[in-house]
Length: 119
Image 1 (spheres, rainbow, N blue to C red):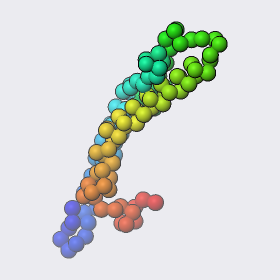
Image 2 (image 1 turned 45 degrees about the vertical axis):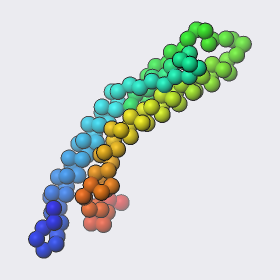
Image 3 (image 1 turned 90 degrees about the vertical axis):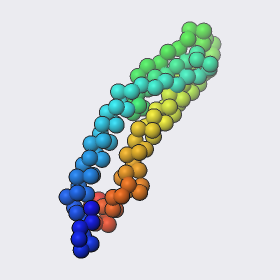
Image 4 (image 1 turned 120 degrees about the vertical axis):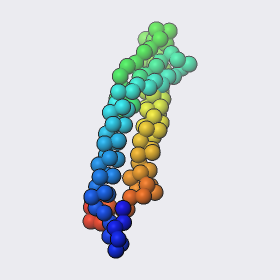
């Protein structure tokens, strides 16, 4: 990557950046199509979200539906969605973590901001 004389091979750096960007796009697409679940109340409420944190489904066990206690149901729904979102975040970190490390976390690429790229 370093040319004789100490300069950087900009074309090689740009090629590596394009490859990283492509891998990132592929990982994001995979996340969007992956679904994870979260639950609350011992499984009385289950939420399903995509890997990019879009709520896809909600299952409520009829046993928890009490017209006299709507607050408990609302709390269970919120807890299930939060649990599913946390699981989606973990999935995102697993999928994108290695890619983020290559974007400046010791991946061998110079700081593009120092070269006049980036904001």
